[in-house]
Amino acid sequence: MSKSTPGMEDLLCDETFLSWYFRTDVRAITRWEEWIADNPGSRLHMQQAMDLLSSLTLREESFTREQITRSEQRLLERIRQVRERHPAPMVSIRRKGWKASKPRTAWTAAAIIIFLAVGAALIYHPHQKAEWHTAYGEVKTSSLPNGSEVVVNADRRIRYSSGWTEGKDREVWLSGEAFFHVRKTPWKSRFIVHASHFDVIVTGTQFNVISREEKANVLLEEGSVLLRTSSGEDLQMKPGDFVEYDHQYLAKRTVRMDSVTAWKEHRLFFDSTSLKEVAAIIKEQYGVTVRLEGPTIEKETVGGIMPNDNLDLLLEALEATTKFKIVRRDDEVRIIQN
Image (cartoon, rainbow, N blue to C red; front, side, top):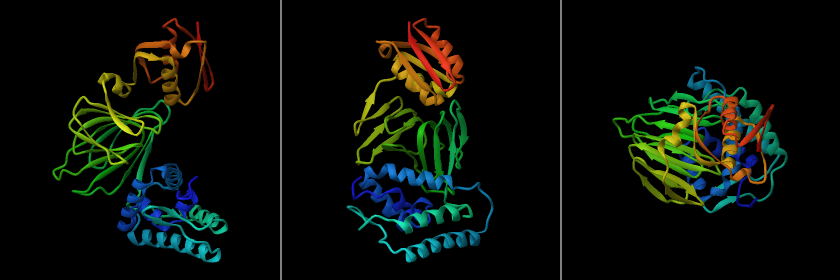
């Protein structure tokens, strides 16, 4: 790991990072957004820290602002006390990187333990990000605070800042695949989906997004969106466009629209799709291990529309092509070339 990249412990012990995550300090938010844009290599540790913070989020309840403030102050005061008992330099954000004179030891671990302990008592903050998560094989339709609709594919996660206000950006963080129907507002507020390799910026439209480290793309059904990468590349999309993130660049591709969004109707659309790709889709959708057995089986192709809401039915449909024999045992699927 580069010396200029903070570790997860560094992030959790930095008060400005916590202020950025909980959206409580405008200056901290601005500084961190600039730093993140300048340091794309920090994404892994940022995500690890965010996942830990997210796991501590309690169910929303009604509390007074005074209770919220007291809980936040207690947490920060305990972290300061630990730091004073176990002196070590605090990390700081610099425009050209992250600086820390030596690794953290005792007080870092203690501060994180305190955070975990106090986190259980931390009152729900009105600026925290709400979060949804779908299970394997589940497709879920939900409404966002402004009435926009989102359909989330299996084993995916969506987070969004609560307390959306008139005239302000509406921001969503996506991990996985989802279809958005964004409601326009009289104030023309921007709706921004933060994906793994780019942001999707819209005012009112319908589009499908896949956001994963190894795969990221957008299909625009109607309206207009602007894609913006972390490197500053912009690409304006029009209805029918399909744009894929490919080796740090955005590239338009030709696809059938119904094949991309078939998952919303619990279907998979295969058009000369390699069995290697089919195996990856099954693993991703259902969390099972898929083994391909045969000298040329990865190059075999599959065509047709198949069910996607039941793994057994999907496997039966694949086996009906007579090209393969399929054996399922617990969480392992073997696809054997005939």
